[in-house]
Image 1: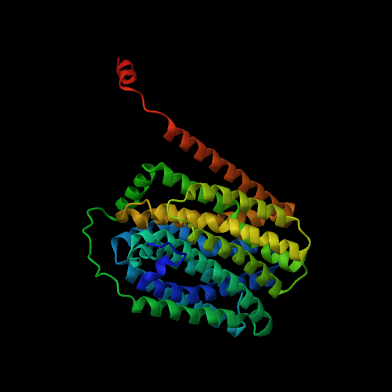
Image 2: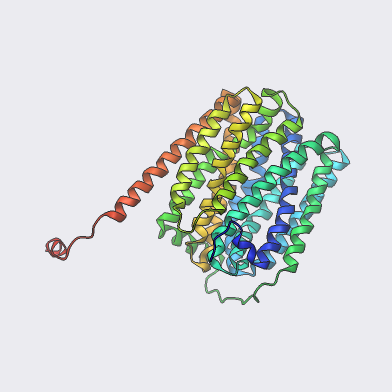
Length: 419
């Protein structure tokens, strides 16, 4: 079989999912950009920007384990359909609120909390369902990499469109278009032809299955290490994005379009990395690629942090996006290709906790630190931490390699040891 970058598109269900989700994600990134801009315009506070990230993602941290259990216990198709409809309702309420012109910060934060609750159940079901959409399971790593290209292409397009619309048509239009975009993914789900769902007998209650997922992770240290590294990156480095409005408005003296361009360039770097990962040959050392790209991620942030020249800063932003993308995509691929099918939802819920749970906590920390030492120095510190985490990952891989290469004791040595 000839390997191509788009092998996963041979599966009809995945093609439908990719198309619908691509449209929906462009709307999602438009809304994220608009929320950050509206919040910063109202408050001029980096702390409130961090609080906004906290409000939208911390509920996912609290409820992700329950979301993973729901994904493993019930029909993932129906769970995902319900979460997408709920997301459309949330986006519609936010659009109506913004279009009315009578809104305050706490209302936006409350709706962000609602979205975080929905995502706690959506992410485990959606990520687990990708496995079921792929007819040839050898195409799963390619599908996961293409998922990331979809996310980051939408990140490239969405903020750029949002920046234009914010200036020309107003913030309410961004929120309204996001609400409409959910029709695409809901339609794609309804057109899928999936195997009939066969309910499984569950002898344990939900809390017992949560504990079972935790025990499984303890018994697979390679997966546990990946999730721990991802949690550290999410907590201490990923929240750099909450500081971008400060760079756009105060450092580069720009407008909403400036903010949209910076976010889009980061998306361009991430999209480039996603295509790179999708083009890798089977058997590539993903763990090493993850460690190297963590170093690239840190280097990009360090170079961006104190760069006052806008065009040069955009180059460093693209480097940052390239390194950042691997954190989520490669970690997800390593998990999905090694975890047992009946544990997939629960292990992915730990993955979701690492991504969506630690980022909001980090957002609060980064927002507070930036008020104390300034935005550029805070960004510099995040870059240094990413480099240190990358070096730690490289050290772990060397130890793992030495352990595998260590020869087993001969029969005579075993006899002496036994004696």
